[in-house]
Image (cartoon, rainbow, N blue to C red):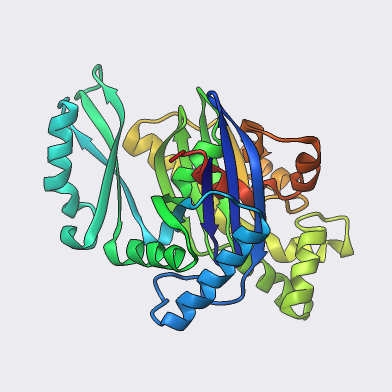
Length: 339
């Protein structure tokens, strides 16, 4: 059994999986809204840590999670993901080179960071021939806070990775190049994935709450009412005289421009192919009209990511989770790591 715990800025999600041969089956899943401080970077008091750990403890108990070893995710805003290029070195030589050169790629002292790397691609026929390496780094202090909060809840952290790395595992499609868009409450994360490996990541501070504020300001309603309008009408022009859609489109356009910039960078700097599709996950993935708007704006096919498509579910669980699947994408990816 393996457990994935996704501590988002507004909701906390957990997924527990059983390994069945090369596949997985769902043992349990649950989510809870949380109004306390979840930005681990800002948490400094024992009181805030205790509040968050108690919520985690209750969630895992209510979801009937039986495992005690969990994997957790770091928000993209609290990690540094970069692509490094090397000549055709051996794996051992690359590991050594990463240690020496990583500090040039991340804005924190190497002795204060947890640094991991992954060899993505060997381009032996390139000009020049080179190896592409994914570098991921995070501050020791941040990682240690996650470990402490989970420990206070009575569980042990056995793995830490970025949210986008988890998403790649849960929703990417084999043998394709795709672009994943994860709509959080405070930020939208964009990833370009080739052959189920992360080649590019970007995080922008335009997301669910910004969409809601735009609707609230345009219609002159409270944040709570705006949230309901956003979820009910989205970017459609047929409902409520298209007022909600008109409020959302300029904010969505910011995300569209970031998608275009990401694809341009991937083509220019990494000589990659244009993604064949966009995979949407996160809280705003299912907004009415969002897929159609993004298809028209980018010319790419847009699909809603379903992390449970790689997991065996019983009929009742499938029915219960069908409308919430995009919310569980990170937690599923974490649980799919295994222990």
